[in-house]
Picture 1: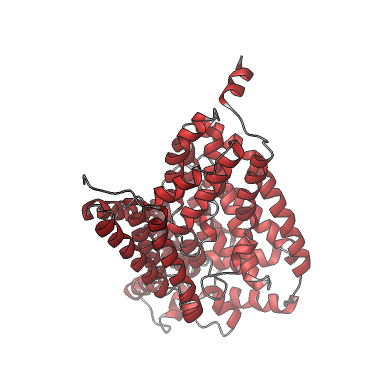
Picture 2: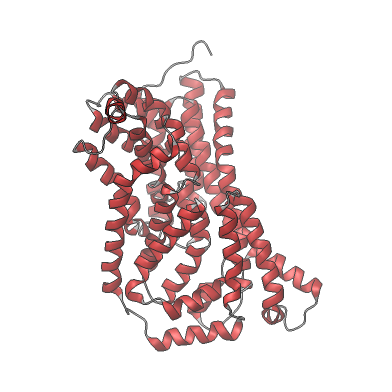
Length: 488
């Protein structure tokens, strides 16, 4: 529109302040139930407030704002689809004995003293091979959470170690979408970007693993003993047919993803293979689930029910019940709702120009390379908190700050590294962000642990801090002229 106005900083901050106020009120009034409706409505109402200000005050056309909201929702659809499939995969992999087998052998092998660092390293290796932190936390992460709970390791610590490893591997993998997106936005190539991230991600993951070793020794043996672990092992073995052959299904899934198959079809294949494994290896359990009378039609009905509503069976033990009675596509619907509402708010903020105004204001305080990188890190974090999506937290600052890096003669890899050091890894620290919503639901830390697991995501916290420290000390900041000199 010809009379469209640019928002002032005060106007741009109104929806943000409104959202934060509502989120705080919801947490105080609804407590653990805040993410089961109240926060979704807070995001929706904040989006509507943004739209109203944009349409009535800034004279932005409704069609433009609506298009940005729809485009924003479109960015989240892949995440929503993956989330729904992972819900089914979790319940089917429990039914098929895959997750129980992982937990069974894990309890036999892993010692509580070094569970946390092993969990972190294992997830890092899987995510590095697959390029997906979400697939890692949704598969091996679920099994490791079960092992950690059985060993009486505090649930927030387990989640923190799993998330740290998964995000490190994702960040350093050439197969990762965000690792490809960041250099594309900055204007550098993939492997230059990955090599440059070693300076920040390397120290961050090393310090994280040391921290998990320290925590592991502090909590080793706390609250559990050999007899309780043996009791869990006995219950698992008496209800599931356990065997190493069941590792073939997750191995096939990891191979498919490592071969660059998209996560969505790969996870569907993993779910189908889980159904096949359940029919061939867990027929006795299926019989128990259908009151000891079963045929092919009843087996089909039970499998479909478990896929959409979750696995549910009374093992006569509260710990084992908590381990295995979960999953199902329906269990993810609340999180999908949260992501969709977050995208409404983020799309409205971007469509009205409010996001751009807030971020551009930060540039006014930039006086050198270090402060520019610091501004990039801060903007990515801010966008993860407001736009609620890690892709927007990479794309918007990448577009906004690219010319500033060029003007200072900084190599584009400095920008791409900063985008990943904050945009990618801090998303999981924000419960209403798509990354935070996904992982809290998949790992089972979405209620009383919602605001406690973040402090144990050491890598996700340290990554932007290490990046900020190096920037402030003018270390590992490379300029275009420096690269040309080294090539001469």
